[in-house]
Image 1 (spheres, rainbow, N blue to C red):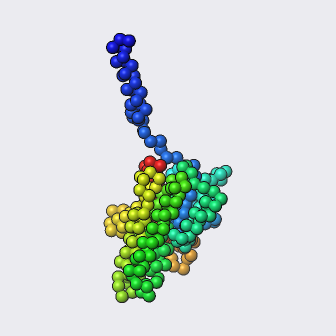
Image 2: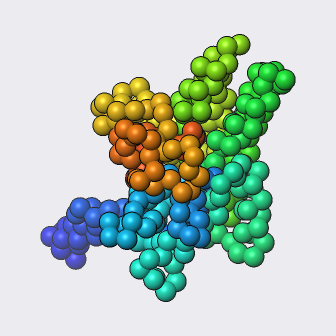
Image 3: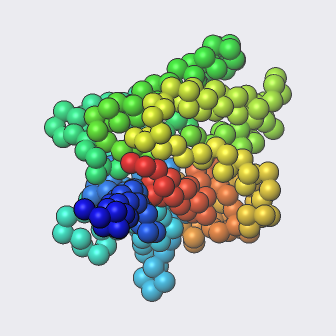
Amino acid sequence: MSQKIKRGLAAVAAAALVAGCGGGGTSQIDPFKPTRIVAFGDESGAILQSGKKYTINGLNADTKLIDCKLNPVWSQVLAYGFGMVYPQCNTDYVALPQGIMYAAAGDKVADVQAKIDQHLSNDGFGPKDLVALFVGVNDILELYRQFPAVSSDSLINEAKARGKLLAQQANRIANANGRVLVSTIFDVGLTPFGQNERQQQTDTDRAVFLNDLSSAFNTALRLNLLNDGRLIGLVLTDETIQQIARYPTAFGYTNVTQAACRTDVAAQECTTDTLQPGASATTWLWAGSTLLAPGAQQRIGTLALTRARNNPF
């Protein structure tokens, strides 16, 4: 074989190798395309059978009835991004909606643990399952209500334990071959509830204490997650809400301390027609005392979607 032919074959082989390794502008990693989405968490991501949500529900312009597709919560934003819906808001009558909604009002980390047990008892998780976890605010509220009968140090330690427990649930799902998104919680001291507690209680800065509990939870969550860089994606809700609270005008907000919804209306019944005088569904951060308004829900859902698309699942 001549040297010229050998050089030619070597060039062809080299070109094939480059192409096989993602050369020529092709991606080395196929985009993640889940075929099912499973949402665990508390009221922030919950959709009721009626389609109502714990935020500021949007109304159909003609009927003035709640339209569950309007003002989506984070779990919906995430599902929509992959072309999926939950049965609780299937207004287009998709024959087999691929969303499973476990998130429910009042849920704490232990409730999520029990629901994962329930799911695994008759189902499983696979590499095309996107499993999203956003829970812990109700844990912080439960611990906070034990103060000052229980010391702050003990409650901080328990908040760490709850955060570690959530990390363990994320790890369980990853070890069961699911693909996991887990979110930190927002600082509960920044909520209207936290701000009110700061004003009402004079023994210590209660908003700071609520933030300390939240931070302890989030830190333990992050420290105990499987750090393989592949199976679990982290959504930094805490940092996002901190930035909005610190620089509201930069994010288009006019109020980041008060609840937009009227207090005489049940949380899941709040709509754009039942807001406090002067409140706005678009420029107020909070819907209720610890509930996010639609703008923040959209932002967190978009964060989760971006993480899901960019994580090498």
